[in-house]
Length: 254
Image (cartoon, rainbow, N blue to C red; front, side):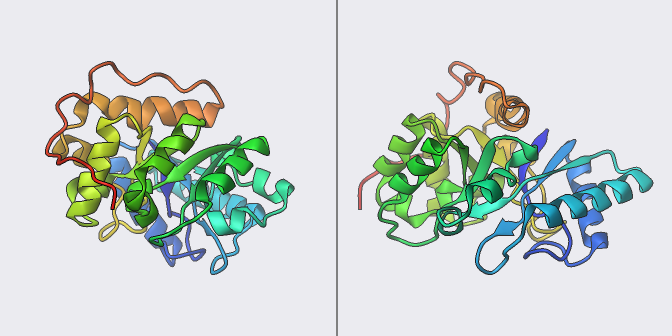
């Protein structure tokens, strides 16, 4: 498996404070079947990280992983706050792609109202970037108006939901919404969004099994992220794989 969203780098954001914590997270990921971690530290006002610092820490961590014989590779990336992305110089934004490529992981705001979020994301697309939207199932604005999320997916934006959302770690409403999005073909990737080896652990496979999404697991955690890292075409989802997703209740606009 490939984990596209993981806060594994030490001392750079709200992930592990030390490289020992990073190693513990990587061991847990490896034990769960992950072979590639994309390090996606926050890039926002609180954590104004840059590509050079991320690359240096990725190199140091990969050296330690090899020395410790932990069978996992870490690649560079970033989780860029939408509010930071709109004010970032194009050259700096281009350096923060997932795996060093052209796809950006963009974090939407955690506010009930986010007027213009679709306009901002589409402007980023028009700038020549490709966008993966982080954990839309946890964004209150999309809960209030799912049509906005549907419109940006139709425009070519991909979505990456957090594995823990599928099993209720962020509450029942987030779980319900996440399953609805998967059922309706609005999810393209599942990632761990791990921050440590225990409380916010790097699980994906167990959560997908528990949610009844095993038929989609390979596509969500291997095929799509591999295409993103390679800069290739996104493969289609397996036919009929979402038909048995339960439980649900009809979505209503609030």
